[in-house]
Image 1 (spheres, each protein chain N blue to C red):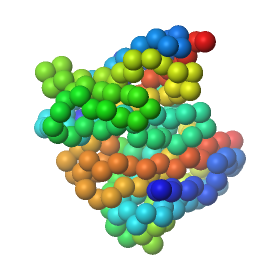
Image 2: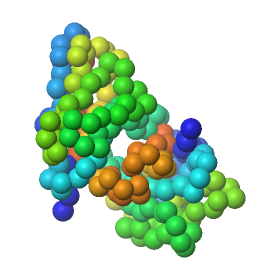
Image 3: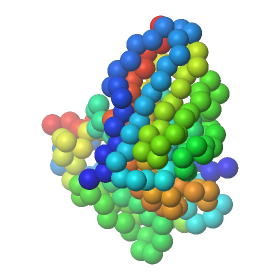
Image 4: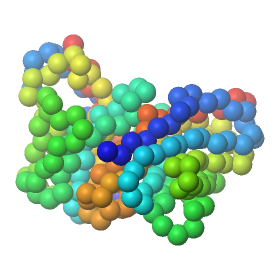
Length: 113
Length: 113
């Protein structure tokens, strides 16, 4: 069975600092991987996704993620965090059957002024 | 723009009541999903529908049922609400192919007293 682990439940960074959110997955084949963001009181919005090709994926709002098969990881990065990035971030892996996703537990990001 | 709407943002119900949560999407997507979101657990799939009148159980279907009579509408039913069903419920839709983005509604926060 597939699974996703986000080791950091909470992360606090200063505005302007760089950010890396960790995601490790378990899946038997080539995975489809996603990062979603949930701002307070909102539904989830897709930041980026990977399913083949270049292992460095660019997304919206200046985010990027790198797929590393050898480490079963898909970490999310941003070079300079803005206060509006404070939100909860979810990593997910897609399975073979249709389009079902398995989500990680989420990482809540707080941004200090 | 894809729009997924949910009938209520907040609901308060009593133990034993029958509860209906409704979700409507306007993009003619084949797939629709109901998730439950709890702190630290991320999103867990309750049920999934890939066509009208078709449904598949997700990871936590116990205590829930679903109905999809029209392509654009997917309902989640709590036959007899219990306090452990207090949670945030998120609906999503997507095209049928693997790797397609799921689009989420704003969520319904349900409190069962």
